[in-house]
Structure formats: structure tokens, C-alpha cells
Image (tube, rainbow, N blue to C red):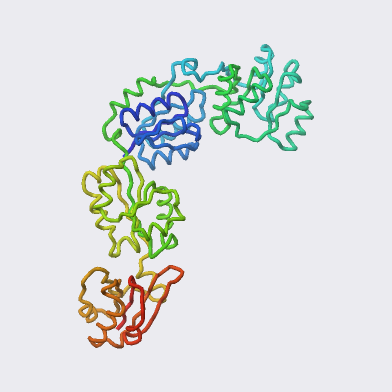
Length: 472
């Protein structure tokens, strides 16, 4: 399993991810945005989680993925995020390593940041420092800015565009273009544009983690070479340098730096179409990169996954060589008609995947589908707990011996062992009064179920791949 998790979104996080790629160390990398994901190197060794997580979600993710080592390389001012990581690691007993940067200036990400404890302290600082102010602390704090000298000319208030907020702004004396009424989230580029548009020298914000767009504000301030005034305090942290973190990754036990296993799902698709698949099978299929199966089955799931790689292979002799040449794909599915446990190729495929080297490269899971016997019996409004199950599809079977010992038999048929041949066999052996229920194209729009005796059915035309319930 892949047991390393890097929380990034920073230069340090990106460099750690590149280090893992270069040294073939597989790791999960968590970034808060799609932009953060875009900056990462594409690599078969990196697995990217690109949405923000709160503390509970971090804890669940660490448990689900079996993470044992967490590298916290988040922004040094993202105190809330680091606290959540710490709590999640404590709860899951995963080892946490805080990766500290030597200085903001050296990283190229550091604005001139002034930390204060309260709004009052921020106002005292701003009174000593000339220049326009972008207030992003929310409408509840706006009254504090009116204590600034010449605040009417200096302060631009960014607030929510609600009637109540705008009314409150006007009552406090904010007018015209001094009010920027917009709903976030605010990107780095939008923050930069506002800073330049209004000739801002000071951006005032609260330390609010990813949810408040905090890092985007700091990055915009840094790129525009202005001062960020932050209400709050960074964590007083201990940790290790980027270079030390790299050494720890190299020295880590093999079990924790070995390749993440891929996953191959052997999925029973039912008789036809996504409607006959379980919810779990459908969700699993949505996450797969490659899907194998007979052409008919691949056609049936075409609308469900039009973008996925589809390959018309369903035998191990065809699939295993492909796997050998395409190790970069990590989630794949092999589709089998009907149920994966009822005369299905899934069993042989699973046996092949359990052999080395595939057992070391992939986790294998079989996901059942709706079987033809359960479907046909449901359509006939009868149970099947006392039905003998056999297959005459490409197989030899002593059907007469089975009829001697079983009152009810379900059989899969083929071109050679057809409904017509079955009717003739039954008549020849004294079972002319047997009741046959023949299912054709089960679950499709042109499904047909026909009931009768060998005499009434033997001259009719049926689909080659039919299923039949025989009751003597």
C-alpha cells in the first residue's frame, strides 16, 4: 500500500512531490485547488487529492488509505490547516512531520506580513503607515476602520453583496467606489487586479485557512510587493527542513515507500446495460481508467463512460500482456456478463491476477451483478432456492441424469444446445409434459419470455443465447 501523504500547495510541497517522482516513491499529495494540482509534475508515482479537507475529512482519508507518514508542507501562515493535520495524525496515530521553510523571502512566496492580535492593533499600525487599505475582514469589522485618519480616502471595503451589508456600509460612511460588493471565492489573479486597480499598499485579513481564501490573499500581496496585515498569530512550530524531509523519505521502511498497488475490479454487469449493475459497481466503474470486456458489454456501457479507454479483451491471455506494457494505469475493470460468480470468466481471471507479479502490483476485487437465474425467476414470480443450476453454454452435461434427481433445473443455452434441441431431447426421454420457461434478451427492451411444453416450443425460433427454467 501507499502509506505516505504530503499536504502541499506550496513550493516545499511541490518539491517533495517532485522528489518522490524522481526517486520512484509513491505518495498521496493533497492540494486545496485544481491550480495546485496543475503545478505538480505528472507521475505514475503521485496520487493527487485536489479538494480541501477539514479535520474530520483528513482523519477519514488517513484511515481509508492506511497512511502512516504525513508530511505537512502547507503554508506557514495556514495555522488552521496545520492544526487540523496535527489533530488528524494524533487521532489516527500516523507520524506527522512538519516541513518548515527557512524563510519566506527565500521561497519567493513571502509578502511583508505584519501579525497583530486584534483589529485595534491593526488600526494602530495602519495609522502610522500611509497608503490605501483593502479591508477583507468582513462587514462586522468595518466600523474599526473609521478610526483611521483620512479613512474615507484610504479604505476600500470588500464585503458581501447583500442589501443589509450595503445599508450598514452606507450608515458607517462608506460611499461609491470605496465599497467592493462581491461574493468569493477570490482567486490570486482577482486579488492582484484589485490591489493594482485601487493602488493598495496594505491588505488586511484574518488568518482563516483555505476556506477564507487566506493564502490567495498572501500570495497576491507578495506578488504585488505590498504589506499584508494579518489578524491572528502563526503557529510557533517545530519541524524539519525540506532537505531533512527528503532524507527521511529515502530512509523510510520499504513497506511505506513501496509502490502503491493498483486495483483491478472484476465486475458482473448483469444481463445487459448499467441497470443490471449494483450501485457499488457503477460507482467503481466511474473511477476506472481502463475497461476490458466483450464488445457487446463495452457497447452497453458506452453512454456511462464515453471517455474511458475500452479494450475488447476478456481473457487473461490477452489482458495480462497489456498490463505488462501499461503499468501507469492504476484503476481498471474487467466486465463479465451476468453475475461474476455464475459460470463466469471472473474466477479464472482472479486466479491469474493472484499469481506473481500481478498479486504484488494489483489488488483484485470481484463485484457481483444480477444473474440470469435470479432475473428470470423474478420475472416468473418464483423463487430459485430449490433450482439446480447448470450451464450448457459451451459445456457438456448429462441433462437426463439431472432431471432424474431434480424437480427444477435452470440452464444457460447456446447454438448447439438450443431450445429446439432441448425440446427434442426431452420428448425423446419421456419428458413431453415438462414446463419450459425460456428467457431471451433478458433486461433489454426486446426481452421475451415464453412458456410451454417441448411439443409447443420445439418448432419456434429462439435467440441462441437463451436461458431456460425446466420444471418436470
